Length: 248
Picture 1 (cartoon, rainbow, N blue to C red):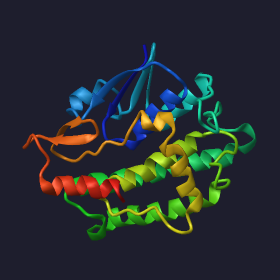
Picture 2: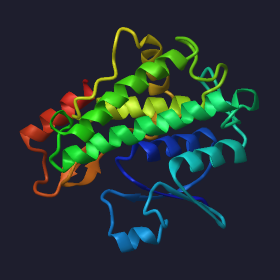
Picture 3: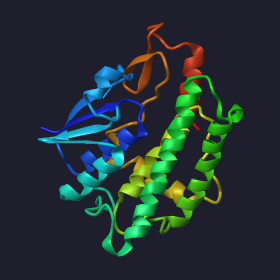
Picture 4: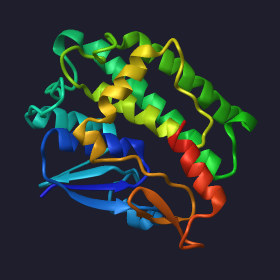
């Protein structure tokens, strides 16, 4: 039986869960709301990283490696009500370097975004810190580059299929709009990106793996609404932050 070990709020883990569902694979969830101790995490992977996928005797960590494996090891299927099936190729042989570059750039986008998020929970805002500010600036340049790589308003990075690149870009911009990080992705010049988001927002794999709000103090969820340790109900401040993040 396949098992995915992941933390709740990770956009990288959400991308992997989406692809597992796109492939129609059965899998067991080992979900961690908060990060365990170093000793406990070291039992999962030597890099202390999740998501980690266990598939029989195979154990893989790093979302890029896991997505490559899932994309190429298992056949794709038609999903009713969707225009494109998920890709069977992680990298197209005739577009090898363009596809590898896009995937590496999207990995950079994800790392920069999660760094800003992690630093904010530690009390460091990107407006007040040179390193975090550089990450925020990098995000905007990467988003502009991604917009130029999308084929059209009706297609993603790879015409005719839903690619791993499409999934990664979508989960990262959805992460930004559901966190109070003051990172904006919407722009009149990013029309193809907005169209990609709209297409994927109602795709079954995305609906089955919703974005969950997380910040220090969250101990569980009522549906998709976070539950905090200090109170059985959200404070008005927390409710406002959740609502504003979902309407961004």
